[in-house]
Image (cartoon, rainbow, N blue to C red):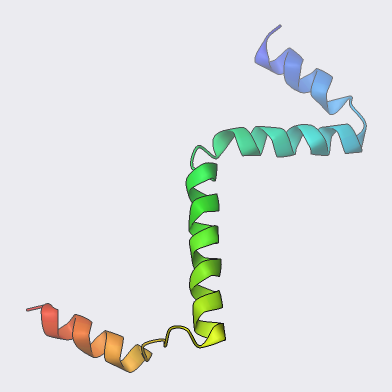
Length: 72
């Protein structure tokens, strides 16, 4: 089956099946899904620490000042 034949066959599927197939194809392109999931977990952990008061955030102005001081 050629790519054109496959495309024609897929376009004959009901919309719900095409949507499911599209989701699976897009997910297959995301090679970093596991890494993205780990970063999401880390972001949530950090947010929980700040929200609970366990850790204090650093004001943006301080972060930018520090960064600018490091750049010649």
